[in-house]
Length: 286
Ligand SMILES: [Cu+2]
Image (cartoon, rainbow, N blue to C red; front, side, top):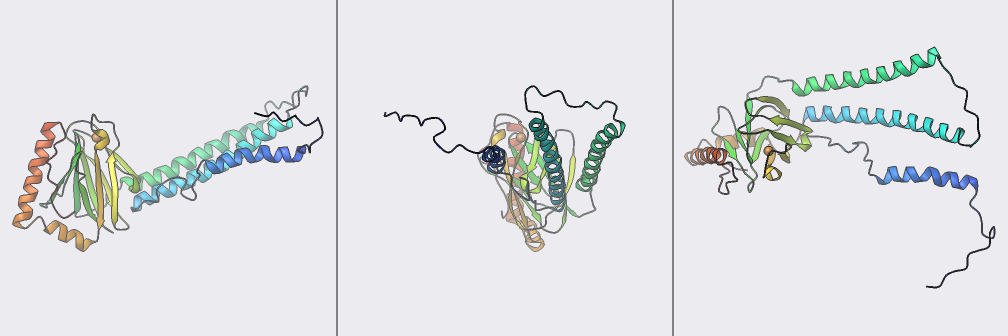
């Protein structure tokens, strides 16, 4: 490889001090832009349920607050670094017992924490509210799958590691969901609902979903529960109220009842097997 003789000192154009500063400022900004800061979602799902959207808005406000406070702190650090960067400079004037300043930097963070706390409490209260409704779904997790039953109805949906079950629910309606587990801790997680809740043995967790649009969403177990945890997927299908009624009625026909019974039996076998059962039945029109 041919080695180019280096240019004599001072021959080429030297970057000005000004330009060097610009380059130094652009490096962190480029890193910030390239690191994928998605706006205005800040990386969260907008969500398709009313409470999920509340959570999303809370996340947005928290993120905006974090950006403002982070920028302010960053600028203060940069200012201090540049202002006192020269070696040999004497230590800047030290302010001790500056009461107004000390009060300011104590009170402002307390107010910030108070606002974050207040916003969280307001949204959490909405998320855990259980308005009265006739539409109910019971979710049961087990090693390694999900069973969805509809109290007062014949509908049963069961799935396992090789066959994702689909939880069908109506749009624009409060749907009361109870969550349990047969064996160990699982996590009932629907990313696009901004929702996750433990499925616990011996404990019944409750939540109400109010979906704002129809569609099919992916759900999965969010707790490392054992060997086939990574295969514990399910689907959530939000349909119109009419489609939901028709789907429920499909289990009331003799054929539907048989399918539901088969699904119930499959559910029992799966729960007692503790191993993935390939031949599980997913009943109903999914
Ligand atoms: Cu699990």
